Image (cartoon, rainbow, N blue to C red; front, side):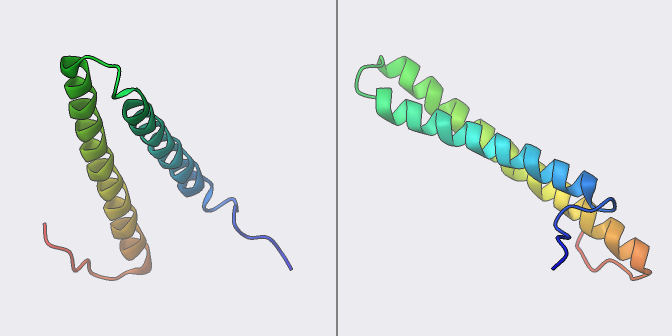
Length: 87
């Protein structure tokens, strides 16, 4: 059976997915570090870590949503259909 996970046409999409995966793994590592070291970190430092994690996570969610919405609209345009998303 022919492997079609990565083709010439979807190479950019797969690279984007790899970058998103790496960004999520970095966030997970940061969360685990903060939880593991939470007992010995000063309270102020711990709050800065949790604030940073929440900001990073929110930006990651918004960025992924933007990327996939843009990709969806490009695919619809390529197929000649009208987008049905709220703007």
